[in-house]
Amino acid sequence: MTEQNRNQTRIERRFADLRAANRAGLVTFISAGDPDYDASLNTLFALAESGADIIELGMPFTDPMADGSSIQKASLRALNAGQNMQKTLAMVRALRERDSDTPVVLMGYYNPIYRMGVERFLKEAAEAGVDGLIVVDLPPEHDDELCLPAREYNIHFIRLATPTTDAQRLPLVLENTSGFLYYVSSTGVTGAQAPTPEKVEAEVNAIRAHTDIPIGVGFGIRTPEQAARIARFADAVVVGSAFTDCIEQAATPAEGTAAVAELTRALAEAVRNAR
Image (tube, rainbow, N blue to C red; front, top):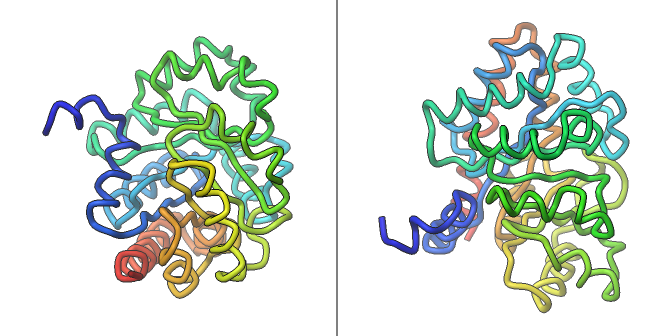
């Protein structure tokens, strides 16, 4: 490993490797603790082993207002099984014992972090091996709350942009974003209708005129075919609700893990061969 690589974060190294391979990455989402801790941990391992380039791990919350039905139900299943922030961080620590390379991004809402205490959360997250945060209800106007303190712990703060983020708003969104920008390709909640690739490509290209940061595209991408179309122009393809559906529809937790692994392999192959 070169000195430059040693100084890069896991997310930066991963995107550098993706650029060198001339392909997009696959970003996968599950809710931590869904349907229970042990099954969710097995699913986390399976994601890393089946081709996920970056893993988003949802922090369960009682009121996930930006999420659709599938992820809302996943979050509630996890909470009903006793999932909490300490268990979520324990999952990351367990993954790090087996995998020191795959970036992990915690995704969710500010309330559980605030209740734990920002400094304590960031310290324990960094020690566990967390690489980034997506906190959907903290806009740029509140960067002092979490975004800027996260920098002190070498944790990326990944911002969301949407089709309604206009040219006046975009610079503020980009200002303190690091790791990658998550482009929400359709308005509404997660799991919504799949985006039109041509429209999304034009919107991503418009954002690229303002930043060099990698751009991941998500919301509504469920199949390998859809993922491949987005992977032709995006730096990463983000898939979430399709995985939580696998877990919900499985007859047993083990079957849910197997279904997630199978879908991950199919998506990873489609993304790798898209260009």
